[in-house]
Each structure stands twice: as structure tokens, then as C-alpha cells.
Image 1 (cartoon, protein in one colour):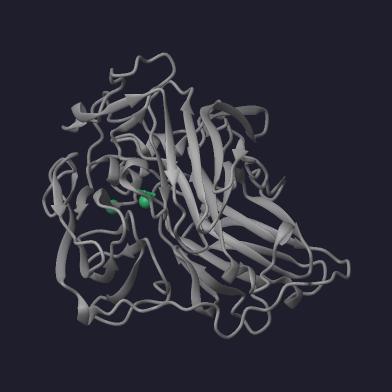
Image 2 (tube, protein in one colour):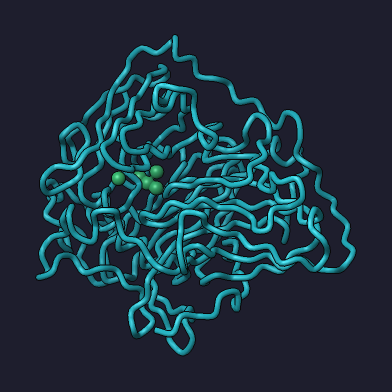
Length: 477
Ligand code: C2O
Ligand code: CU
Ligand code: CU
């Protein structure tokens, strides 16, 4: 297909979803996953699977401590499961990969669709709709919701099943960060297009066989065009003022090293204020930030550091060609008032989990087997648990790999305590729920699971690796 001109599309911002109803303690939302059409390449419609038919899905905004209930329905031809990534969520609403929402026309109780050859899918439960109940007992942070269907998360998310879920609280609001049109959620995801303008997700195997570790899935599925909020290489017109960018890497497998080009005078253009799990203790100025799949960086950029009328690109130093360019900010010439405050000094308290208090140390080895990707030599199987951590106790979890894997934990965030037997890296600060583990580098994290007993997941967030069984269950008790 003729790819769109770079920087010809305006940055879309996903709509904020209105609650269907609210009562004293709870906001109720309704979302339907369904096919939709998007005009991404000139002259062609791209079919997407979206929440409410949109890619990205509508943004949910929750208040910390205020219960949020989302009823999800499914009008897609395949089953889906919804997971709130970064949510501190009881098991029943966590989006377990076999807790399916029935596809259109399917009868409850019957399971439709294949399993990518994975055993254990027989335990699947199928319902025409599901009510996800989120207590939202957690601090302000940039969360996102996405499909988590066993064996099919990669293709489902690639088709568009992802959206933002922002949590706000008083502490963060007191900081006077940029808001309204100066607060931009940026969902970065790469895609390839077929000749007819549709998303090109590689068909499994040359003869319709199962995907294999040596095939196009080895590194996960990589696209050649970068989309931000669903638009290829968009432009955002911005005021000459501070902006808050909530950057999410929603790509199936691609890592980015994002940098402003040109840098503002003196550098440090990306002032990081938060990570996966909300505010850092203090802001950290970066020239570039690295994001593995599912990681979030909350940064403030002060466009007043550039001359009026500047054009500033956000580039990806790990990409080439169409994946080296991400988006552009066109700074206005009008004199504007900036009523935000510059983030400086203490932003929040990030109480350290004390590794000396750890009651257990567990090692998880992420590696390839002949046919699949495994954790401690095991392929994911529902009901087979690799660990039983005690609620309320600190543990040390060590992640070792032979390859590059972004490792994600459900239920609670963690703190990185070492990388490659040395101090945590530049991009490991704060509360994390996904950590970029590089080949032959061990990463140790301190984690304390709280509140909810049940089975939760630990997995690689390279979605093709996840679909090829690099996922494990742990049971909190
Ligand atoms: Cu974002 Cu278990 O996933
Ligand atoms: Cu998650
Ligand atoms: Cu992986």
C-alpha cells in the first residue's frame, strides 16, 4: 500500500468514556468490543477490532479509591478476555486467559476457537458478557486495558483491542501538572499493512501450522509503521507551554528509545515524573527513554524551551526507516499562559520495599524450548502454578533470560532492586509492573502481593512469546 505521508495526520486523542451510571460509591461503564473501520492509509479503510469499535478504545478515568465497574460485551467473531494492566484487581475481575466473553452468536458454555495447540483450554468458561469490578484501591497511574485471550492475545491486540485507563488522585492533582489539552495519553504501537490497507498480522506457519519459535514469531511480530493513538506518524499542534505526555508502549514486541529531536537547549527534554505504577519520588530528566512492550513513562515536556514555531520530532533511536519516526509536535507562535507548575523536588513518597525483610527468593528462568517459550522449563497451563506467595510479605523475584523479554506481573507492582548484579538502570525507577529483562542480564525485583487471594499471572509481555506459552500462574494465599 502507499503509506501515508509522514506528519500529515493530526494526533487523535481517544475519547473519555462517560459512565453509563454512577451511584454513591461506584461508576458503571459499558463497553462493547466490535469491528470498526479506520482510515489510516490513503484510499483504504483498515478494519480494526476495537473497544466500542475504536482503536485505541475509549479512555476510562477513575478516581483512586472509587469503585469502577465495567460491563464488557463482545460482538467480535472470536472470544475475548479483558485485563486491566496495572490494576490491583481481585482474581475474578483480572481477566484470566480462559475467562472468556463469548463471541457473537456463540452459546454460553461452548468454547469456540482454537487454542494455538495449548493444553488446558478445556477449563475455559464462556459468558455472553462479563462484569469487571475494579476496587481502584491504588494510587494515580497510567493503566491500560487490553485483550488477554489464551493463545490469541497477540493477534487480538494487534487488531486494536487496547485502551487507556487513567487513575487520578488528590496527591497528584496537588502538583499542578499540565491538564486538559496539555495532558496527552500517547499509545505507541507499530503495525504493518497489507495491500488492501488492512493490518498485516503474519499467518501462523507456512501451511497454516502452529506458530513456531523459529518462524516470524521469534522476535514477536514487528510492524514497519509507528502509530500513535492509532494514527501513523501524527502531528500534535501544541502551545508553547508544559505538556504532560503519558507514553505507553502498546506494541506487541517492539522496543523504543524515544528522544526529542532537536533536544531543547541544555538537553533533558523528557522530564520523567512517573512510571508504570504512578509518580516517582522525584522527577528525573532524560535525553531519551527506553520502553519495552507494556511499559509506561509519564513525562513533562516544556515546549517553552523551544523557539515559537519550532517543529520537534519524537524519534525512535532503536528503529530504522518507518520505525525511526514516531510523531511531531508543532509549537504554536501565540503567547500563552502556562498555569501548570514545573515538577521539582519531592513529587511523592515511594516507600522502599526492604529486600532484607524478604521471606522468599524465587528464580524464574525465561527461555526457549524446542517448540515454545517457557518459564522454568514449563509451558503455561491454566491451573499449574509455579509459586504460592503469601499476601503481605516481601519477596525477591529474580528473572533470568536467554533472550530479550519484558516481564510483567499481575496484581501488584514491584521495585527493581538490581540489574545484572549491579544497581537498577536509568529506566527502572519507581513502582513498575513490567521490567525490560535483557539477554544474559538478571533482574531482581522486590514485590509484596496484597489483598487478594487467588491465581494471577507472571508472563513475558512480548505478546507472541506470551501466546507461545511464556506465561505462568502464581497463587497468592
Ligand atoms: Cu498487559 Cu497480563 O498483561
Ligand atoms: Cu497485567
Ligand atoms: Cu519474551
